Length: 153
Image 1 (cartoon, one colour):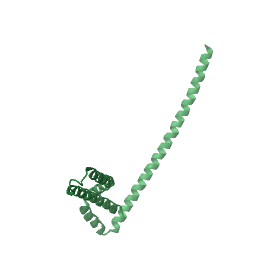
Image 2 (cartoon, rainbow, N blue to C red):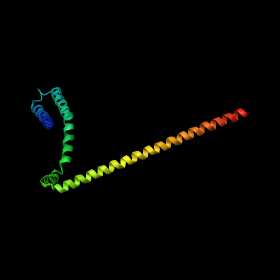
Image 3 (tube, one colour):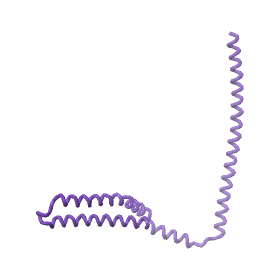
Image 4 (tube, rainbow, N blue to C red):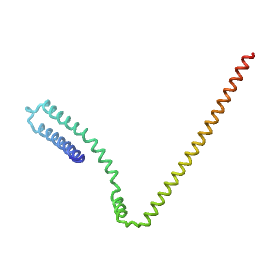
C-alpha cells in the first residue's frame, strides 16, 4: 500500500466519523423524550470525538505533504513542454564535443590553480618556520644576556 493510499484511507475515515457523529445527533433528536438520556448521547458523542481526534492527528502529515506536492507541481505544464522539447532535440556531436572539451579545460585550469596555491602555501610555511626559528634563537640569546646582566648586579 502506498503512502497516498494510506492518506486517502485516513481522510475517508474522517469523513465516515463525521457522518456517524451527525447520524448520532439525528437519532438522539428523533428519540422520544422519555427514552432519550443525556448521558447516552454524551458517551456516544465522546467516543466519536475521540475517533475524530485520532483521525485528525493522522491526517495532518498528509495535508502538509499534499500542500508541498501542490507547490512543486504548480508549474508542471510549463516544465513538461520544456522537458519534452529538450528530450526531443537532436544532439549535435560537434556541440557535445566542444562542451566536453571546455569542461575538461576548465577542470584542468582549476587543478593547476589549486596546485599553485598549494605550492605557495608550502613556500609560506617554510618562510614562517624559518622566521619562528630565528625569533626563538633571538629570544634565547636575549634571555642569556638578561641572565648575565642579573648576575652582574
